[in-house]
Length: 134
Image 1 (cartoon, rainbow, N blue to C red):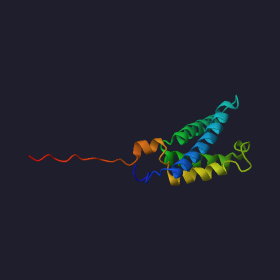
Image 2: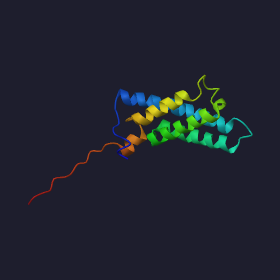
Image 3: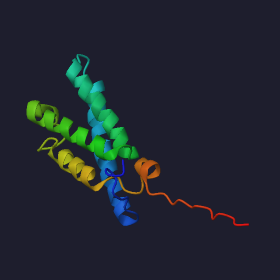
């Protein structure tokens, strides 16, 4: 796991990464909930993509397994953009391109110090007690 998380920036960079994660997570949550709750005749692929978006959005907001979730969400958004561009049309003029770009950026930058990943996989200080000589 250390290779995925080279470092966890603190201070203002951590706050900036938190803002990026929350923006992407909120968008994915809203898109996923719209897919799940939007229509009564929901087929399997719409509900699967909606569930994927809700799960990825929640993980983005919490900062849990961020590089993995960012990659999966970028691939999912790219699939929606290529095969069903009308699904993202109500959200912007260029559907899903912003989310794809920001998800790739977050995947490359990491979650930051304000995340569950930093708590679980962050650097730790190991204190070794001195041996008592008699």
